[in-house]
Image (cartoon, rainbow, N blue to C red; front, side, top):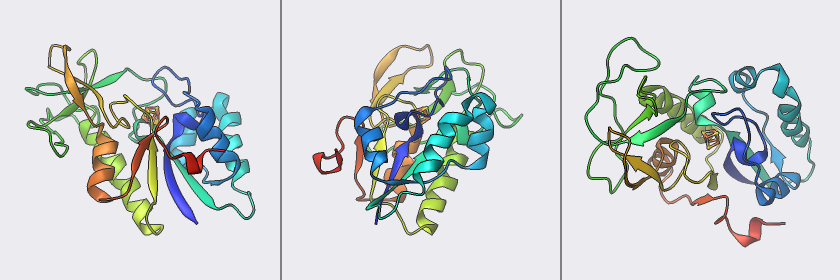
Length: 210
Ligand code: SF4
């Protein structure tokens, strides 16, 4: 059975920073034909009681019989404990001075996607915190879990997200847009699963579309 890891918001799970979802019809159609792994308990807790129904939609599909595919929903930002709703974050290239969201120490933690000339951080847009360490830890854990489960055959990743996007807006420390770069999860997925395809919600292959 093919296993695809999917940005959870594309399945209709309200895990975005504003507390909404970004349902993608083609991805939702794919989910109807697939076994969809239940969200992890930490993500369910973060979504809270009011969102229990949409979390249920996902767990019902787990019982899909004879499914040819398994979808693994993952929201790096919820898994990182950033909360929902939460302050928006963005990719930033430049000097570090913001305190880490998860530790009291001031941090210069960065990630450097292949092809990027300089290291990048994931900062709150209002510059009150650095989410890089928290996101990296959550993404490392998910990559480990996918590897333990036998690997993954592809990723469907929400475009333009600082966590999931393949080419997301990149900013300087003052917030000016200076180009694009992959989000932290998109970069780490490439590093941990070299050669495994990564698509956006608009570029995943026709063969997967209903
Ligand atoms: S982190 Fe990824 S899965 Fe979570 S809301 Fe943002 S784009 Fe969607």
